[in-house]
Amino acid sequence: MPPPQPISRRRPHNLLLISRLLSLYDTISPFTLIIDSLSQSGEPLVREFVRRANGAKTKVVFVAFGTTRVPRGVDVFLKARGKGLGELRKGISEALGMEEGPSSTKATQKALLVIDTLHPLSISHPSQLPTFFSAFLTPTTSLLATYHNDVPLPHHPYTPTPLTLLKYLATTLLTTHSLSHVLARKAARDRSEIEPVFGIEEGQGVVRGLGSNDRRGVVVEMEYRRRSGRGVIEWFFLPSDNHPLDTTNLPLGGKEKAILLTDHPLYRIPSSSDVAELESPETSTLTTFNLGLTDKQRKAREDVVLPYYDAQGERGVGEGGRILYEMGWEDDFDEEEDEV
Image (cartoon, rainbow, N blue to C red; front, side, top):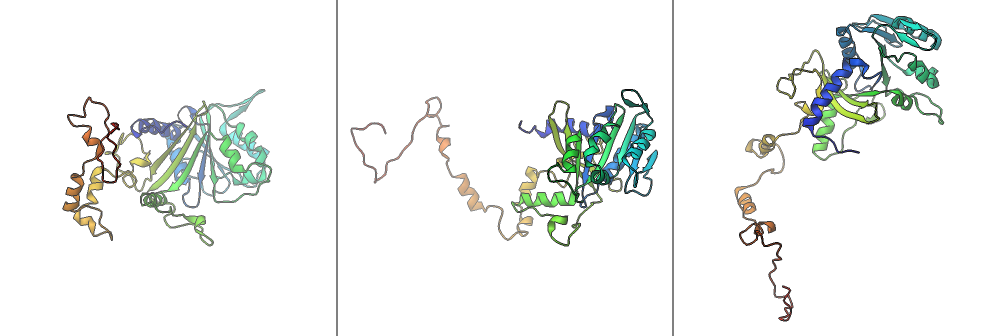
C-alpha cells in the first residue's frame, strides 16, 4: 500500500473528485452505492444528488419501494412495491426513455436513476442483481441506490451476502456517519481511551443512540474505484441547508459545499497555539493533574546537556566520531591497553 499523501496535495484532488461525483460529471461513477444506518440516514446525500442533477438539467427517475411521497426535484416517480422483476425492468426502461435495439439498449437523454432501498430486490432476486442493474448502466445513465446496513437479510451460507455482491458491483461506495458520533470517537482516540459505540452495538434494547442523524450535516466516507483498479478513500463533511458551514476561512473555501472532514472546525488537529493554551493558568483547574511545568522544572530541563551536543562543539566538527568515557572506581584499568 502506498504511503498516504500530504493533506495539501490530497485536498484539491479529492474535493474536485467529490464535486464531480455529486454533480454526475461525465458519468464518472455509473453505479454509486450509499450505505446508511439508523445512526445516520442517507437521505441528505440523495437530496444533494437530486439537487445537482436538477441544476444540470438531468432527468431524475425515482424508484420507490418504501417512499410514499414524491421527493422534491424528481421528474418520474415509479412505485415498485409488489411488482415483478420483469414488470419493474420494463417500467424503468420506459421512464428512462430507453430504446430497445437488436444488440443493446440505449438511453437518449442523460438521466439519474435513484432506488430508495435495495432490500426488496436483495430478498426476492439476490442472484439476479448484476443482470438487473447492467440493463440500465449506459453512458448517459447513472445509478444511485441505498442499502440500509442495520436491516438484516437472509442469505444462503454458500453464497455471498447481498452487501458483498453490491460492493463488488459498485464503482463508488458512500458510507454515511453521524457527525456527533465521529467527534465522540475522535475525542476518545485523542485521550487514548476505548472508542464508544452507538446504536445496535450499544447492547440489547438500543436501536438508535444519542446524536444520531445530526442536523448539522452528514459525514461521508468515500471509496472511489478508478478504472485502473486503484481506489481513493477519503472522509468528507456535507453540511445541511439549515445549518450552513462558513467555508470562507477554509482551504478552497466557497468553491465546494462539501469539505474534508479534517478541515471541519470541530475535527481538525489542534495547532501549536491550542497546545500552548493547555499550559495556561486558566486551563490548569480543568484537570486533576498539572499539564505544565514550574519555573524550577523548566530551568532544570534547559540545563540538561544531551550527549549529541558535545559533538557540535569546536573539537567535534570535522574530527569524526569519538567515544567519551569517564572511568569509575569499579573499572579495572590496565596500563598496557590503550584502547580507551
